[in-house]
Image (cartoon, rainbow, N blue to C red; front, side):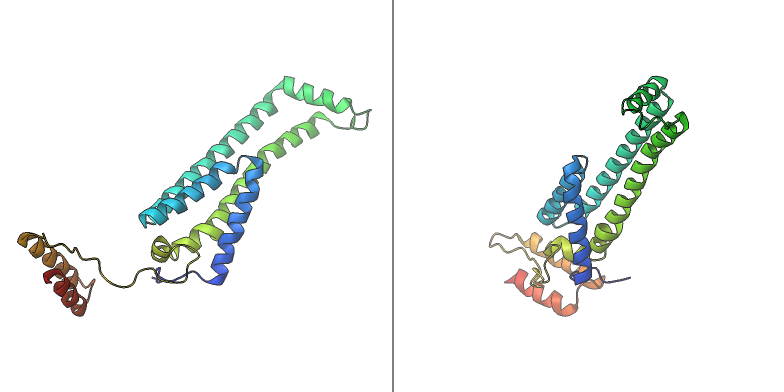
Length: 205
């Protein structure tokens, strides 16, 4: 299992920037605005809570949004494809171009509408692939790092000191509970005995 508490490499940062740039461009189609806002909200929530689960939720929301868009596009295309009035109206519009498009047949019109089903499907899979390989995977590979330090930071914001409650009014049983908690972390192998001794001194002082 790879270490997820390391800064992102230059190539991974490039992938993330490329995806964010593409997402920003898609905002001009309006349909890309919700997905871009969800990404920004996920990054903000992760930074605020220092918990990568905020981004995981954002990924799920974007995936659901893309599926809804694809479903709506296919349903609209199928309705148009099976609506004789729409086909007739479309055929009449072709006849308006001074006869240049008279060669269009009903089969060709149906094929054109079929493209209306294939096109959103292709766009769906392209965007989902870009989302996975240019954004999700790089972030997941460094989830422990980005949730604390952010995506573009290569400096650890954690100074390595453990957070220990300091108060003059700490009750005796609270001190015992605190020591017991850190002792369990030591016994489980999450911290070293040296770390435990440092923490104990801080609690007792």
